[in-house]
Length: 316
Image 1 (tube, helix red, strand yellow):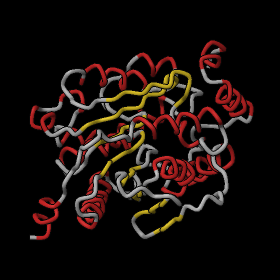
Image 2: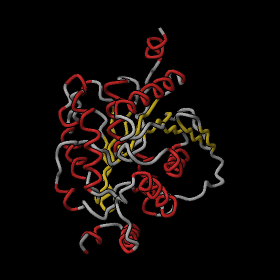
Image 3: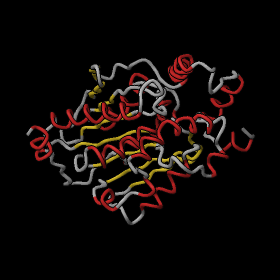
Image 4: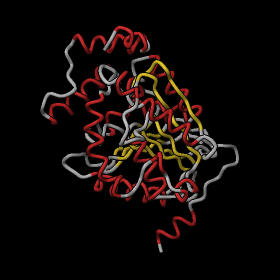
């Protein structure tokens, strides 16, 4: 990582990246089990805080965790969240501080779903389980407005589920620094491929796991057929400027320009991948999460998404 690239990061994240380098934190120890533990320890130490006394409640179940703010507005949408980590790392526990901030800011429940991790499990197993449990929650919620959101690979999974598994169900899909291109490495891979919290080498591993599933189903966000584009709900995309995935996110926004009603784009030029996970301790991340909550998740006035027909069909 060059001095120029360090300076391109927000000051807080620049210091954290420098500390990471000094501490000799490696992207892999050679043991997947150790790598998973180390990744969660890092976020716990430098990104999150103990659960605050803010009145929010946590309902942790076998398949998901529901975070309800102290002040809930029934008119706000119910948010369903699929977390990132390349389908290899993390769990909903790592995301709780971020999702708690999101729920409190939105005054709406946020439910994050667990899924089995690769390589022990296939992508197909994970997607099937997510689809099953998210569909069940949709039916249980009746005609409440629903938003499906995810970060990194969770963004790709959200897009797939929203188009191919549960079309017509969600009022909006929110993609936060998402994986969108499993085939091309753009310039941001070279610029931010090391030392920016998601290395290019790690992303190549993740793509090798993801590619077979999405290729077999001809699902490419850059080559969506007209049938998919026709049922694409309002969509928000958030991109980070110091991220290997930056350029594919920006390219997808340009690709969809004029083809997707309700498209919103927020760009944070000096933040890295996974910045939301640091909202507990870094002001820059906390501020960005507040902006995302205020814009990306906002539904158009009077836009009511009905799930009555979906529920009746699923129960018949």
